Image (cartoon, rainbow, N blue to C red):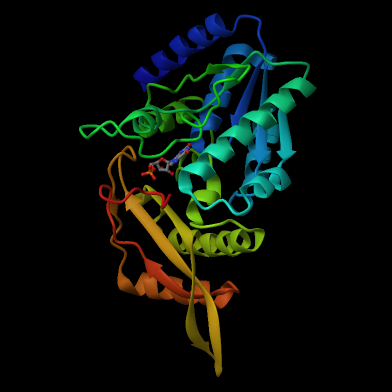
Length: 319
Ligand code: XMP
């Protein structure tokens, strides 16, 4: 794709110009955007870049392994893997307000990056995989009144007092363009084709307060759901699919006993840029089978519901 080839060359020049001889750290989230940004920046400035992958304790199953494998083994890009789950989950304890969750996570990300930058002997720039829709949605909702829908952690969540300047080479791109750029840069198909995953991670898929127990249940339910989608060959037809853990317990019956467990919500949408989305029309047989598998395989869940809300009026994530 010649547009992406041209974009790649142009951005490489721009990055070199902005960064000079400075040191850059790039936060990886496990998502496609930050991975593409990192590979592009590495191409521009090589060893002046260090990637930092923060495990905030709200990642999907096996996420850390996937990212570490890709960067350390496939690309040989220096990568620091930080386990900051204690810090994040500690500060999020009892926090139920969605914007407060996002802002807390955004602030902690910066704190962790600054700590890591210090350990590396200082960094001048922080690189992020911010996309055009992230910028717009954090500022205002197109066509409507000027209100913040959500503070995307890589845009609105940043504290003003941050010491590092931002490098955001994808700021003008939409998701489909980032994927094209990812292929252009030689990222593996399996990684580029992954559904988007938000920086705040499972925190915004766990309405109400977040605990390790709830996150474990959610991670397992999500893995079963995605496995079902892949097994039925539906993964690439869907723009984004994930499970949500509701902060509600309901009564059920299993064997000859009463159960009182959590409800899992399933979300799947089609979209081109995440700005608008339609709920995905699974057939009922698939949904029934998936519900049965989740309830049988994930302890703590006894009910599964499917979200049939499009965007607008719903957003894709639940918070
Ligand atoms: P919403 O829920 O706003 O999501 O309809 C639109 C798309 O953006 C992703 N998303 C985020 N991505 N940081 C990110 O990098 C964030 O804070 C964030 N919040 C939502 C969401 O997963 C969906 O693909």
